Image (cartoon, rainbow, N blue to C red):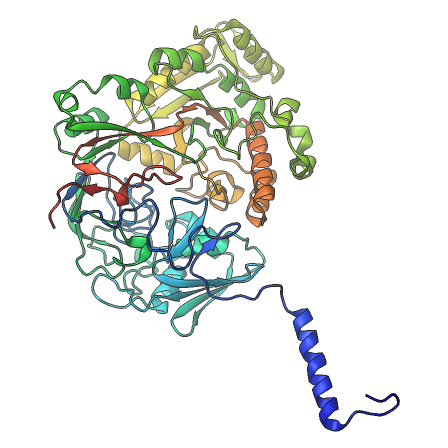
Length: 620
């Protein structure tokens, strides 16, 4: 353009358009939202969009046969989301960490070989933005319920609206959905969730794991009620027969819509799955020995049983095989949980004193063949643990507001649970515990430890099995040496579940599965919002804004480095609260199986994956 001369009108219009385009380009986000085949909590999904099958599944596995699982417990419900009822929902209906989703399915399938990544199932694609301010799922047009009806966006919307109900619906669902500002249909065949300012980066993945129910299956009243009515789901199996409290029989759906999806190749191989319930763990194992169940799972490893119970003929003949599977997850948190709702456990230093006298060394030698490793924190046996690692700069910044609550050994990584002399009466440890209680105003009145007001210090441990009773009695004996009176009460499964769900206990033994991607589920375990929700997993009754703040930080991180630091800081804070008496773990998984039960050569990151097992020489 010649200096001093105006551009012609067409050129002025082109220049203006170019400037507008440049401004729009500069204002646009770094990456725009677009539909993808998978979503990972951090980083990129491991498998490309054209993957053929999960690496831990064998697409050539034969279909057919009958798998029988023996489980300890009871059931009275086929509703996948209700927490009402004296017992619990039947295994396999939905969200079963071992048997899979046999009847109801989520929008997307979680990979067992990654920390937290989901791949297509009911939803064919997922879309979100850099800030994860929304998520949109486009449904697979082929997706069907077992009665042949297509799965529609309306079904997803109806399900999520019902799951917002508080109270008798699983509390994590209503908690997740409280962060959703708007749910709407997204053309051509999808659902879009727009989030409010309470949302976090994990929320799109959590919503991808919600069950999808037919829109007319439940209403605002029945969604919270127990039922044994035959369910209509979208999963690979149909409920064939129900005998509440005894067994449930699943039959393969020959018209299962997703059987050829990459996420389902080599999966769901049995024609029939039977879940047999036993009220006694000895009866459960005897049934396995007789061939009445196909596998025996050590959900909470029992070394004594593992080493001594396999002297029956089928083992010698090679008909029963003992398998050990590697497991890359953090150790399950197996522990005594103090119920801090009880005034006696309100003081962390009292909890610390009571917990430190548990003699792990005696229990390991006398009850468990020295097979266990002691836990000290909440993420042991993984990179997420703070044990043995000094706090880094990120951790120190996160913990700065709470530094006075965290002892130097916890901050520098040198903290460990006390190591006793194995006698069940280590005088040095008993003296430290006694002094701690004295410092909190307790004193001996004769042979009884009493509070400043004269109330005897004592509590009840609620247990549901003989193994739990034995370990509890060992702790009780040691506590009696400092004047603490402890009773151990064993109850049947129905009563145990009822008391656990209503927090009607002083102390109980329970376990949390280890996860490589701790996030929003931690609210239901340790968050203030779950403290008084019936049926939540906040067994310890924790209500601490500091814990809430670190959970929020964990789910907000974008890089793996920052995430690991946030989890370690969280670990240090929980350790400092002395909410539990950590017990023990083994770093692998144990399973016994009849030799006709086979599994792929590849074990995923999170351990054995039962839905990929098959029956040898099975015939459909």
